[in-house]
Length: 67
Image (cartoon, rainbow, N blue to C red):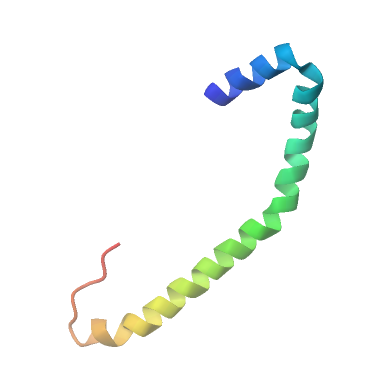
């Protein structure tokens, strides 16, 4: 809600900049989407490696992993 109010203030005081931001926001989001997907993949790989490394301790009766 606060973001919307700030955008409306920008629209009132500097409408060309507000319209430029409105047009460029989806383009920037599309450009950054591959980096977000890579981030999810890297996080998944790290979680898998963590699970593999901690598996022997869990099998031998170590305390359960807490997050």
